Length: 90
Image (tube, rainbow, N blue to C red):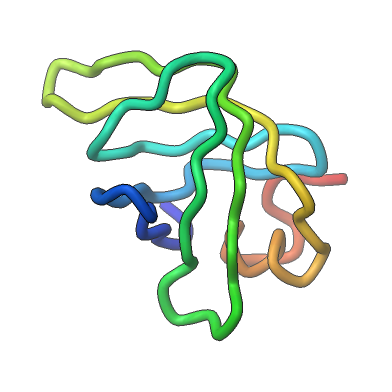
């Protein structure tokens, strides 16, 4: 998986995939469709992430797969979240 995001409202997530208009995360907390969730990227100074949630599905292990659209995500931060410049594509 990719980078870790620590949510402002508690819990955290790991990035599964990210592109210009889509992000998939595995989160310890849910966020309902239509909501926006904000967090800080661990280990990236000033790395803030906002996601407009499209779906949040509970998994058998108790985690949640959150799919959404990243808001205001610059290229450098998108690449840091993906773990490499080629993950997720453009």
